[in-house]
Image (cartoon, rainbow, N blue to C red):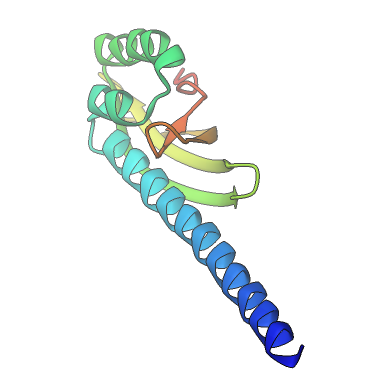
Length: 137
């Protein structure tokens, strides 16, 4: 009886540790993806960021927004992650970032707040962005 109780307790401990590791893994993956995506935007790699991180359903709209930015001469100068939250149990994440930008020929720096909604996709095992680009006006 005591042996069975120990075995059950050991099983519960193992399952708890495994659950924590997988949640932690999703959170780390989220943070990596979120930072990589925003860095790509900052370095004017908008189309590449779209191909890597935008959900397929929103990709066409994102690419047309990226083309519009390029045609209008929008240059991203810097970004800051204000807040981010990963909810591994729901497989979602939210980010609020600020981007400093200017539109040529003006050199006046403007700032836009960009709220990003992320979702973890199991079949491809990666984080994808569900929201498009903010309006850079």
